[in-house]
Image (cartoon, rainbow, N blue to C red; front, side):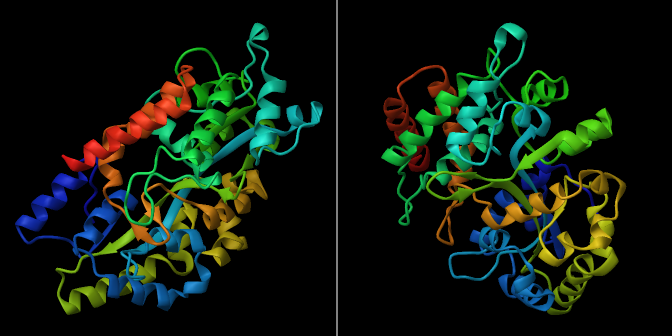
Length: 367
């Protein structure tokens, strides 16, 4: 096994392709999978074989959708992932009679109610700094309003009415965030320091909360999706990618290895290397006593199942009805979505921002 830093992955894969030394199996996330799969580097037949062998009905539908190519075959085998949602203090919400923060209305009501800056208390933390975190935070708001970056034909529709509505609402929420531009550090620090009782953050927060003690774990709850016109969740799926350049015998061995990783004790042992951060994409495993019999996971109780259940609604901007648009990687690299978020939370007009950022996206793809 060769371990590679994520930022080094494109260079290492390019080098391996040039020297004909690609591995049989690679474990990495969706953006790299999209690019390699779209370029015909991955074996969709091998991936489909493994998914069928494990049992397609065992996977959460959301992770299958995200690893599926335009022809319906899967670029890779979804293995594990993390979710982003809203972490909140149950006791504080009960004290103020607030509903679980899963809808636009309940989020806005909670943010307004809890915002007391003169007492160093802030209503909510969502990403407003023009970074990947802001894009991640904004994605489920846009998708829950049925807004997209691409339409079915691959045309940029970031300036749609639905996207403008999502940007306007996000800007309203941002009125109740701490001063300045907020990032994941803001969310992490304010929640752990009891300065904010409602933050958007990934499931990796579980480890930090656990370090604060059992009482904070018991009081912390997770809202795994956002709902307005529809439900949507954001997260990352890490997949097992089988390279087409491998020989028939190597692919056979690669499929055997992949099945081994995702069955029985081997799969649970793998997930337990980072409990809460690496979550099962197989429904029977998420619900099993074997998986939940872990010191970290046991402390979180039913929250663990809430987290994995969000994989049913997980979405990203680079997909439209099963069609994959790897070009979104170029838009991501230029931070066009994050810049739109930052601009509207600075008070700029959402329609103007959407139109100008949409044009930037079109220019980026035409270069």
